[in-house]
Image 1 (cartoon, helix red, strand yellow):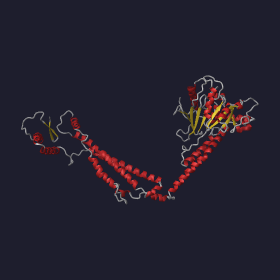
Image 2 (cartoon, helix red, strand yellow; image 1 turned 120 degrees about the vertical axis):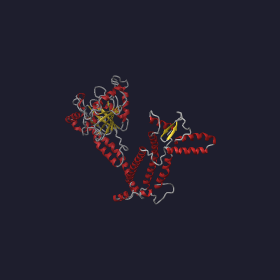
Image 3 (cartoon, helix red, strand yellow; image 1 turned 45 degrees about the vertical axis):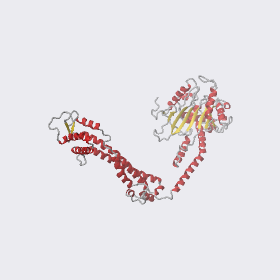
Image 4 (cartoon, helix red, strand yellow; image 1 turned 90 degrees about the horizontal axis):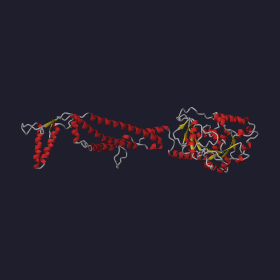
Length: 582
């Protein structure tokens, strides 16, 4: 089923008349929401609870047709016999027309969250399928509700409930106590004090024995929320009329009665629209010699008007509460306004914003502030301590050989020579190993950058003017500008650090005077061995002297004369070093 096909197709337009329930109240509700928005009260925090409307009546009385006419949409199952076999809870949601979908009407079922229906004929088929899924295909009835939400800019936020019709004798798969079950089901919905009851009775039956009025009286003994609806006025016997019903002379109701003419089954089969049916209804009452005199009690538009008046009275009950909320908000706003002092001209505000610092920023860096702290380092002194002590300590803690093992060095040397033996120490593995150690300097540099940035933020907060406390918005904006400036500077400094580390790793300067390598490294090693030889006991000196004699090979001197050396004793030249294999 293509639920999301072109939203503009197969969609009836809503008539801008009072024929739909709540249509005349939409501008009023929108105006109230605008008042709440301008006063700073969120509409979600103060929502006027609209009453529910439940349609009750006997089977075949025309309940569903009345509900469709009030909504202005043709979406409920129709046919012979019992059609409404599960309670349908219809939630109308007012959606502004400037939404992403341009306010196109759509439906969504509670059992299919996320699936949007733009075609009301698809909604009808889904109601039928869901009803058969739960209640079967043979007249069965279920108490499980079908929840449907219709979103449109042309409806009022409210809930309409279509209930199964009261029946006397069970048919099909209905249980023997079907009447008692349906009555319990209806009472469970209409006993809510916030529910308006539309008691639907056909005109060709005795109103005194109306099932709808009887069950409505059980839930609403006072009749303060029951509206009588007389249907099928066009099929009464000739010479009879329902004027006594409409005028409340048979069974009086506080809210009165309204007579309507619904679409017949032939109209449904011919796909006659609700708008066309309303036009035919209007013509019927206009031409009828009796009903023409009681036109204020006849027609779907009159029923919608009566229901709109009930809703308007319901809204009026909440206006005092809304007024109290607005007054409370205004009182709190005036009280807050007094704390800000007298009205300040825009020129003074500009002067404060230009000179929002009681002490210039640089005074904290140069330690020339009026009040020096004796508790902790702050400002420039703190930054100086970071560079001279903390940063130096972080660098000294970096051990270049901590993660460098002899095995890694050996593998690097062998991998650089490939198939050949190593005669000289190649530069490639040396640079690879050194670059890895230089990269270790990045972490302490970035730690120092973070500490300095935090200190600069503290300085900005410390030199803020106390006069800005009167202008929280201006103060917040200035702080945002300063924070953005520091963030941009932080990014630039971070980039500089990365570039310096990258430059150091790109070129290894082995010609630097401080660089130790080659013969200098051998000389330092020999000096260290001599010192160790002097300090060790006599028995160990014999072994060390052999090592020193072997080291003399480095300078081209051999204590073994011209004796040929074995393969195990043959020295290997590596740069300025001669290493003895074996």
